[in-house]
Amino acid sequence: MSVRKILQWPDRRLRTAADKVAEITEDVRGIWDDMIDTMDAMPGVGLAAPQIGVMLQLAVVDASEGRNRRIRMANPEVLDASAILNTHEEASPCLPGVSAPVKRPRGVTVRYMDETGTVTRRDFVGLEATSVQHQIDHLAGRMYFDRLSKMRRDMLIKRSAKLKG
Image 1 (cartoon, rainbow, N blue to C red):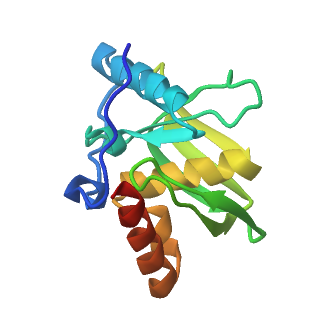
Image 2 (image 1 turned 30 degrees about the vertical axis):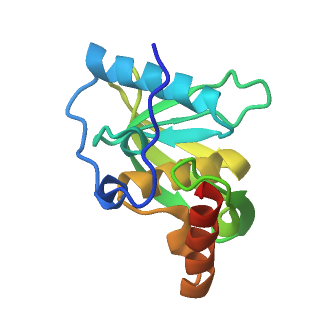
């Protein structure tokens, strides 16, 4: 296992939809393991494969207090979303140094293939739901700041660029 390099905005791969995963193989499991190591090395509760340059619909999430509830997902898809919205401060290692409050459904029901290759349906609530939705956005070539107004988005990108030097 290893910590992978995170792509930096505006790398075009961050705007490219990832390919579906046909089956769970040892290679896929190895990518998930690297993603977990990479997620643990940064301050974050989730990571999508395109963030490390792997253009597959793979994501990992662990929003647990003890960082001991790793969720590995392939081809995740939101089936149902709560009408109640929560606001969480979101960020991405792809655009370091900045964050913004983003409103998303408080709860979602997601279908995905788990590490055994079984198609699973699971409900997520709160921060876990926010992280899952954030990762699904990455898999579709979207960034969290796409959910902001154009003015807020432009300010955020400029501020991050300024921090990079």
